[in-house]
Image (cartoon, rainbow, N blue to C red):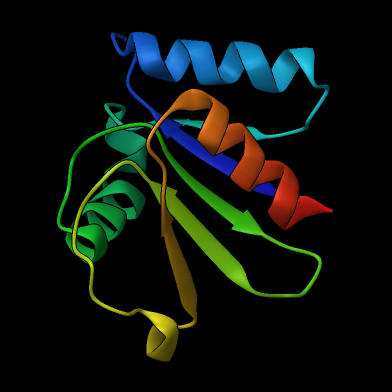
Length: 102
């Protein structure tokens, strides 16, 4: 299961969603600006030490939870049950998504 955290004004977020749709990859979109999502979003921002979007959380077939972000803290989160991976471009992000879900 993929959850993508986005901002309504983020063109990068829109591009990633467009690419996920082209690839027919199912996802849950969470608007990071919506008040109902503030607890979930603040937890991610605090964990990663970033507020740059999109951020993806993927529960992979190997039962690990991957968080994929553009930047943020480089500390290890494996003790918290997360593997954090950083992407540099949309193509790199799509590669990471396909690698974790297959």
